[in-house]
Image 1 (cartoon, chains in turn yellow, purple):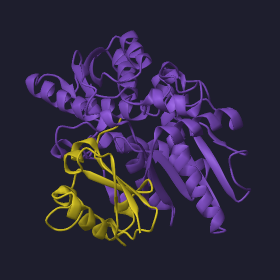
Image 2 (tube, rainbow over the protein chains, first blue to last red; image 1 turned 90 degrees about the horizontal axis):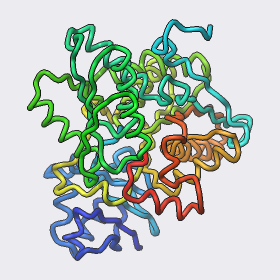
Image 3 (cartoon, rainbow over the protein chains, first blue to last red; image 1 turned 30 degrees about the vertical axis):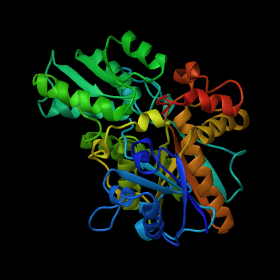
Length: 91
Length: 316
């Protein structure tokens, strides 16, 4: 089961400069653990010590903010695209 | 009554127009709130006016004051008009990767522009403005990202207008920047319309805009209360431009690019309602017209070309 994770510039030091990496997992949590096994240190940037998403990190499952789905427990399916972005201002 | 004593008095009371061609069916309808019909042509006239009036009422703004504001454009243009009419000087801190029309309009209204670096987008503008405010304690920063008068302007005007025109409203879809529109309209509608869904459409820019030096420089507006939203969507430039063009071609509406992003999220809600066989009356915000974005190239050539031209620009 392959899921594409899109990595922002600021976190590409963990992916050898790759913009997108492939991973597996039935939830976002599992995907992060799987990605961390090959890109060590990435997960610690995405989730805080309490296990929830870090404050200035936004994660989108097929363009929808996962905080309104199930947070790190959001279920994933084959072919999903997970986009990770730092929180920025608009206005 | 369409006669007003002054331009400021004509704020708001914008039309809500149906989209018969883009709406999927008679029971799933889309409605556009034409915020380009405000004094300077954007929804930001509402918060700008409310923030200035409240600062005056609180005694923070007095004659001769200098107002300071970080803005990617529309709030600055609205403030420039309000400040001009009320006799305040205005300094706008604006990212350098914003359209030339926005800068021209600000200059025309007599505002001073301080450009902040493109990398980091509005985050940098906020940081620069906060430093300027600290260095110049006599300047008054209204600070749209954390000023309750921003959300209150929508609670007191946009929300009531929507409900009066569309009592059967089931969804409200707005753009997410300062979060003021969604927080204010959301609060108003949730208090009065059981089950109403509040949906946010957030522009997804090119990589340059997310080029922070570290994640701790990330920014969440102080006004933001996620419990006020039911869903939040990230919309890239391809989808935003495609929907912007559909609005022109099918409904005759010439809108700014951020409105294309908002329509994209609204159409997704419409499709969901159709699939669930549910009635829906979905109101969405036309934040501004397309005029200020002609120079971006978003309105000519193929969709791919247009999206490519928007790379690195703050298009919403």
